[in-house]
Length: 134
Image 1: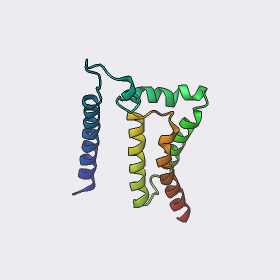
Image 2: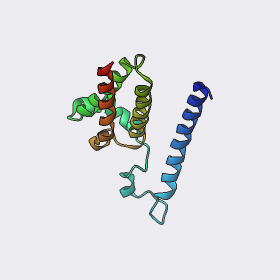
Image 3: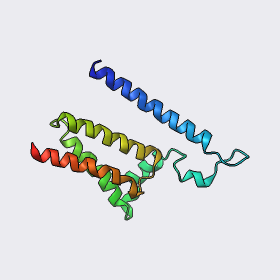
Image 4: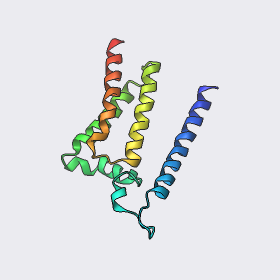
């Protein structure tokens, strides 16, 4: 298979995964007998928070202490994109996984929950350490 075919298949699978996750969460996490949403499950990630996260990431966080979250996400994304074209194959693969995790956080998580960023630190360390060797 060529790389373009793999990219198209990967993008289709990601979109399918988003649709599948959203539908399963909607059908499984309705815990009230009358069919209304249960507010306790809302915090588990039962809803898509993409637009709220974009608002917080690009506007609201710059006026609060949560600016650290915006600086972390935007700063790391800008850093990775600056060195994208000169990256090795393993760095590009790590960057793809990093972008997938960021996408999941933006869609299903809350941007201002800093515990979600712990998983991203090894990717940043890997990218920085492998960049310094070249």
